[in-house]
Length: 220
Image 1: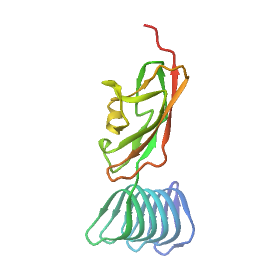
Image 2: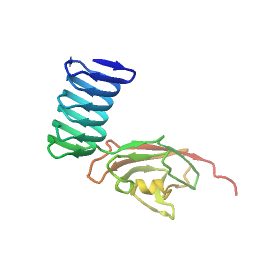
Image 3: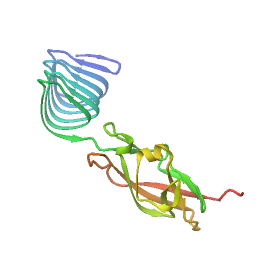
């Protein structure tokens, strides 16, 4: 077993029965029995991994058995075999490769500072710094937000601010088409909750709250 800064190689004659974590790139020619967390994992022909893999990307030319979660692409080559539970962003399976697994799509993930400021009685456009949905296997127009629990105002399309909406897409946010409209009340704060669903029906999880701070309207 040879290790370099951020990289690790499990040689063909090596047997590792331990967890491997915080690895930039792991290359497996031998045998690993344990939990693997790495940015990139390559299981070469003859290499074997039993346990779990959590990685940004993975290429399988050997054997993997267990729970596999790959954020981006998992590529199963013609000599590769994966058995177990697989969650992925994208997947490719070459002719000759074997996949015997419960395969599930990676659900979208919400990021941002989840905070906006709006003039009292006015409106503000949402930006991707405020909130954004990340999902490597869906385009922005395929990621749909659902809005609940609004306080202090409502969500609307920028060109129809008086019309409340409860659903919009990541494409709408990216294009600056969604705004929060304050209701003019005296409260200093507001909020709304969001979840995101992708084209396959996977949901981002529990609702995330976007906090709204109300500021004094700018004088004309």
